[in-house]
Image (tube, rainbow, N blue to C red):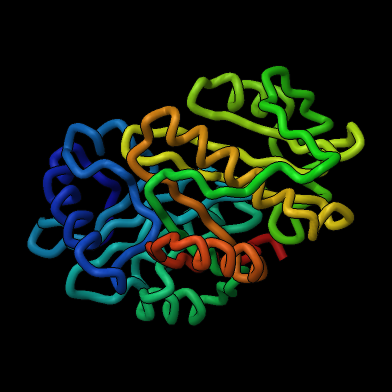
Length: 282
């Protein structure tokens, strides 16, 4: 039986997500909370599969970019297909244009279920971490790096559009969304300037457990000068000064040089997540 999540389900869901965490082949995008109290604030549009009244599976639907994203499915002892079909039907009923899913690269069962329903892989994102330390990359001659304290959304968008060769999520954000995001003290941004022109940027999101380099990019015409390395060193230095115990970075599969750099610097691989998408309006 599949039905909407009820408050009484939250203890069982906390146990289900903890079970998911134990093995990489079970992992998928899911709520972050691991207590019933935290999940009560996170879970909104979501459904459970039950056996004898006990939740054994979960799936959720959350807004995302040009459509919506699936949280889960997380299923203990069964196929993810029924929950996937249920959330797919719900997304269609809401006229969601594009539906996304984010399984671990090792979650073969869910990847096969997604592909059986017509989802296709977009890219794989690799995550790494290290203790904050001095990386030893100097700012190249003729380049300056400055923290952005008064953001011009159009300059940000132009730089993001030129620097990102792949999936440019932030281009869909409105001016107010960008300004509110970078007004938060834990969200920091630096631009690299070459001859007074912004040619690269790095974003750092500080958290209690780790600081994450959320984005690092350099426009094609300015690459090969060491600007990306200097931006990375700037962000890692800021994380260390802020007392972050760890620094995490990410790179898509097409960003081969970034992945080689992180491995060369001794960043530890954490996980790989595959982005799947399905157009629902065609």
